[in-house]
Amino acid sequence: IVLLACISVAVATPASEYSGRKRYDNYRLISVQPENEQQLKVLGDFQTKGYDSVFFDFWADPTLKRPAEFTVSPSQYEKVMQYLRDNNMTPTVEVDDIQMFENIAEFEAKVQPELFFNNIVDHSQYHRYDQISEYLTGFANNFGSIARKRSMSQTTYGRRTMDYLEISTNGFAGTRRAILIEAGIHAREWISPAAILYITDRLLASYTTDSEAAYMLNSFDWIIIPVTNPDGYEYSHTDDRYWRKNRHYRGGNCRGVDLNRNFDARWGTTGVSSSCSSDIYPGSAAMSEIEAQNVQDLVADIQNGGTRLIGYLAVHSYSQMILLPYSHTFGSRPPNYQNLDNYGISAGNALYNVHGRRFQVGTGPELLYAASGGSDDWAIMGGSVKYAYTYELRPATASAGGFVLPASQIVPSGEELFASFYNLAISLYNDS
Ligand code: ARG
Ligand code: ZN
Image (cartoon, rainbow, N blue to C red; front, top):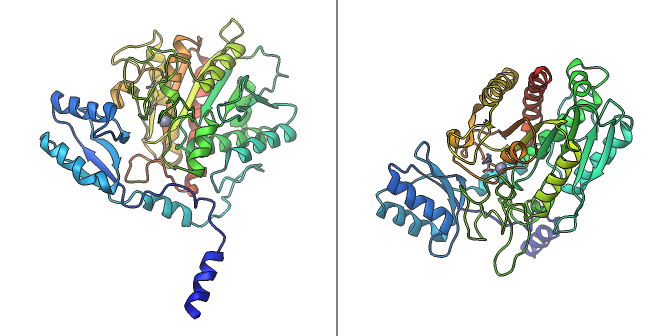
């Protein structure tokens, strides 16, 4: 009876918000360094074509420069290790239970962090999409003379509105140069929307008291998209913490397109898989996806036939990098590459000076791998934007949690990113 009572108490305990989500108990993170072109090819096929009809989730793509990393379920583990060994590779287990990261992150104390501005957002935790959308309403209500909440032209496949914030201390005249921030295009990279909410909150709440916020807002109009993939973001909360793509259903087991492979920038040429269940499936055609079309329409709207939009800042995680265009092909560079690089290095130093985190600066193919269809490359090639950067936020490595960054790091991550954006704003303002 005592035992039964205990069980009933346990059952009556309110289910955690995450109870329906896929669990990753004993899923391992495998690390493997291909030593030559032939092994690189084996790993490349393993990623893009799958193995035994299973597709693997790569946290670091195969390159000769650094180990590839991918997750594997307990049931696939032995088979996969054997396959790699048969190809003369030496895979190692980098993390033996990736569920652990979520467990740690969930059980950490949720203490409201100290902020030097009167904030609207609770920066002690990650939020659901509806809450983020309500925060945008809050910004617009509290700072109505300089902030407007807007929705993009089309609703998503899951019928969500894609909400964004426009900030202008110039009466929304549409004449000032502008910078766009694109966060949350990859569902599982939660620190991206969270750090951008921090920055937005701080820009607005300290505009009248802080010289850096004042400089940023008086020099540029800002267009801020906190979640560019709302359907995927929600799915990563409710069903699968490691979901990356949107949720576009295309029949069979074809669910989701990698939005950062879908833009019209050498679409479908590098860093993609033609298999629709892969995590790097680029869609059926360039700009096939509603979310990418919305961004394209918004950029066209801001540009209005000109080049008012001078900066496009895409925010991802993880690996602590500032990526420069172009990333579609190794060695391909925009004409103003030298300035892009100089400003990027300066923005990286400003970031470092806040909490001592090193962010590497370089093009995607130099630091990671070539990948086509990215919004950063498209901003320059198709959006007539002069400066595009892709930030990969904290942490540096998979063993430090990868996509699951404890919520206690939202504020420090936001602080260093704010300093970096401020530095970039100075560079772009002074750019002729
Ligand atoms: N991790 C990002 C991605 O895979 C890097 C994007 C860099 N830019 C690019 N156009 N490939 O989407
Ligand atoms: Zn990403």
